[in-house]
Image (cartoon, rainbow, N blue to C red):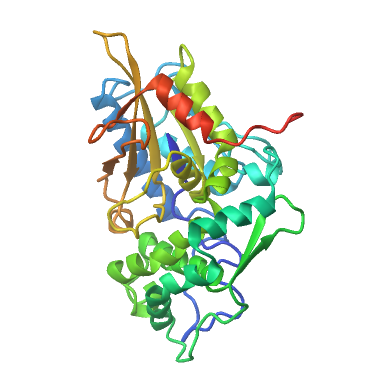
Length: 372
């Protein structure tokens, strides 16, 4: 299971300097980038819900501490992913002190930051060509989201022609050559849209969510701007192959191992979920979110199934999420969206033979750089 972290305070720069708004932004109860107390409680609720789900499948007992080795949790090194993993574990198995694995602080984990780790021989020129082929170019990407940009300006309420002024749309190689940099309206507004979603999911008073001008419906609409970020960074074929390379190989190893934990949980970021989905040619949809946007604690679930009659092994995919309103109210409802795998599953079926799944995914991942 590949999961995004839970509700956090805004990242530094997520609302860019120079953004115009009619009033100051609401305060958060924690430092930037950190999980909030509400976000941690929501992760505990999610952990308890997923324990009940897995118990219903017969994979784990409904109560008590799982047997040694039955649960594996690995997170990225950022505090928000580690804390999300811990809170999930506390709800999943209260009092059991499940181990949370991660690399040392300051290290780069290729599973979650493949480009930064420089593990796949990433070529920004080829990446940009793939991005432009996928999007039709940055200007067209912006044009497709004109309505959402207008909606966001209304929420910001700056009473200027544009509430998020800045450079024109462009995508360029990063200075270190290990990635790409995006400029323009989508770059500037995607984070703002995400902050509005986080305000709502955090349970802030309605008067503080977009200064009282945003509700669940309008936040879903402007969420298209956040989803558009992945049309650049993870969904183009070249970007998906490289962003999901190490993570995809880790998943293949887990699914093909003769033995393993009943739950193998990887807690990372929205880019991890969207890159893996893109490598599998999946369209992510979830109740309450814009098409292609990612839910806090949203998880791609890959189940390995075994047929006792034929001895055949297969893989089934789904996307487990909670709506923004569910997270806001700390309810325990989790939605499951089944995902047929293009090129692998037959029409209207969700199971893919394990060998075919491995072959399909492996062919869509960038090779690991020799020496890494």
